[in-house]
Every structure is written in C-alpha cells, then in structure tokens.
Amino acid sequence: MPEPGVAYATVEVTVRNTGSRTGSEVVQVYVRDAQASIDRPEHELKGFQKVRLAPGESTRVRIDLDARAFAFWTAAGWTVEPGEFTIEVGASSRDIRETATISLDVPLPPPHLDQHSSLSDWLAHPVGSTLVHTALAQLGSAESQAFMSDDVVQMVLPTRLTTLVSFAGGDADTTVSSLLAEVNDAG
Image (cartoon, rainbow, N blue to C red; front, side, top):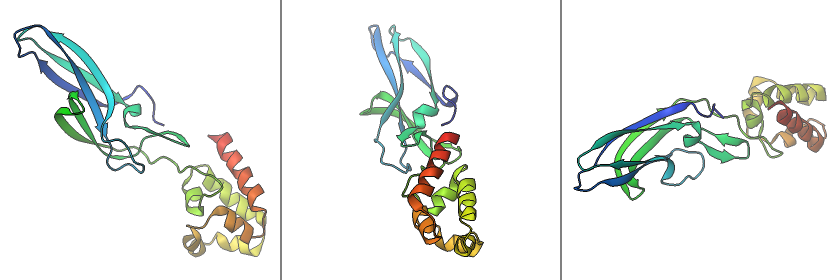
C-alpha cells in the first residue's frame, strides 16, 4: 500500500453560520469509488471536522485524505486502485453539498496469489513472475520448456499454474505451495 499519512487529496470548504445564534457544524467528507474491482459502499466517511461559529462568522475547513481514504482491504492487505473517485462534502451522507471528481494515478497492486491463481496472475506479480519462470525451467522437460515460448504463454495465460505444473510432469501442490511461501517471504 502507498505510504500512509501522505495526502492524496486535500478538501477545503468555507463554512458560514447564517443563523442568529452561535452554532456548530460537522463537515463530513465521503469518498466513492464506482470503478473498484470489488463492491464498495456508496458513501464512505473518510474525514470530518467539527467547527463552532458565532452568528455571521465563517471559517475555512481543510481535510487531508491520505492513501487509506481510497483503500480497501483484500487478502493481500490494504489496496488502492487507480481511477476516478468522487469526493463528497456535506453535513451527512444524506445532505451532500459539494462534489468533485479526482483521478488517482497509482500503480495497480500486484495480484493476490494462491493455489488457484492463473499463469497470468503469476506473471503479473513482481516476485511471482521470476519464481514461476525459474520453477518451470527447473522441471526440465521438453513440455515445460515449450511453455516458456511467447506463443504458448499467450494461449495458456488463463490456466491455473497448478494445472500447468502437473502437465509439465511436476508435483503441482508441492511446487505451487513452495512458490507461494517464497512470494510471502519476499513481500
């Protein structure tokens, strides 16, 4: 996950007391990620600040949103995906007064790897890619070497790595379990 505490976005709004008595308001900031790879809530409260103002008084409220404001939890940990996010500011999730859309240009997180992961997932993983190339090369059979040609790799990308290791003559469960342990140790 990107570094916590570093502001990805800053929300600034002016709050004014238009009433005749001193009052308080809680400025609430919500983030919506309609493009996420998982289902996410319509409104996720990600920041708030309470202000107290005299009649006619106004103040500027600033709320920083760090990586955690855009993240969601997966088996691999906190994840921030690139894309567009809607920032909503209001007194509540049912009283939104301002909206803005921002784009986050963060690198895609590496895929989570498990016993069911495809060759495509392994090759997209920064550690898994090297490990899978080495593992298939060590199987030593002509079939396993054929997997490494570009044409064949493109055809078998959606196939589970366990299936490919079995087809190449290896012990799929042991090999993939060992690779998973190495990925976990590295990261």
